[in-house]
Length: 549
Image (cartoon, rainbow, N blue to C red; front, side):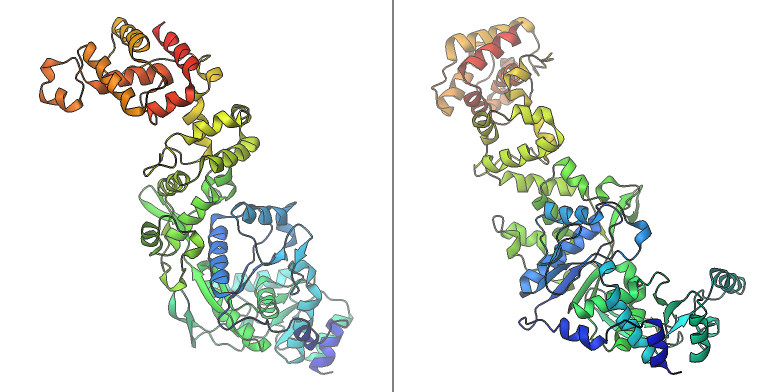
């Protein structure tokens, strides 16, 4: 018996690899177009690192006129969760990342290079495994779990490298006839790759982020087809990347040590190797030390966290680009109003060491992003968020016309307000603008520097009787507050008070704080004149009376 007959015995129904080469031809794209993929497993929530890679992939595809693929690597069937693919698709959609090809739902997909779910590609992997066996580059292995455990124990005792290689590769040297007898006898088997590498030799590789790296050659005879007929990640990704004509693989640097094995697999299969770009892990400061951001310890590791908190997807994407490319922050400052799509992303400008994830910095970015939104956009996004996470806020927003006025306060100016970082902040930041909430609350008024109750009542009464007029423009309105201040012995200007504090009880700022607190219950709010214009005369009168009690 020869290798080809052995391969036929193992995979009698597998098609020749030429069938798949014809079925999935080279893509007709312009020179330099990047074909990239995000290839998660449906085993849980999408990690912030996965979103990070997806943003990079989307940028590379868009900038070069290429293709971004969503492929699902589900060969580890035991770890899958229900609706895992939908979670991935929806998580990307939440951040406005729509792949050009790949999975669109649990069992739906788009594109002609599919199937895009690895469990549906079993026949393809077996065809290429059969090809390797025919070439003498792979072989059936009959090692039992007990044999493998005994081998590991001996390696540990001898303090040598673990693995299935060299003299430890027991079934590598089995003759074709002996292997055929075992197969015919029904002995369980897996297919292993026959490595030609030597650990004491080096290979040189250029990574698009890490630069030039040297590795020991791979000498491990890894499993490429498991006992259930499905491939391992290493083999599947090589076959898939080749047939989907992937040109650039952007992945976490935990895969860096697999590069020698992957290069050897591509060479043995006769494939052109894609360009690899290994992204540094996203780190977190923890008690003065850096560690990888963790699914178990850090809620912000899950991309769902940002939607639950109501941090706009644009802000998250901007922040991740900020930590991905060192020149993004400068570009954004120089181009405050340009769309993020106009930024030219460069793999070569990515950090080689791990970027530290800073939630405070993200919220600052988010404040800037939200400050540029129109009141209509804020209303729509807040309402969408509230429907999912906050029924009280949703009820407050039912009067759309009034809510638009509330969101319009200090918006659209040269220096728009920057007090909202996330939609979960909104209710607390606007609740005082709604009479049914404010007038029914047990407001504890803290009037600042003026704390004499009788004086406060007199200030409020005088303002409403002598100075209040809804028709006043902003300058007239403020001049009247200065008149009110003077009437009660407060300086008309802060600088007057600072020059001669002994001549005054305080200054105009103290008096305007009394008005602000009476109307809002807060010492710090956006522009009081704009707030009063939105509240309207009846609400102002009612609030003033409440504050005097």
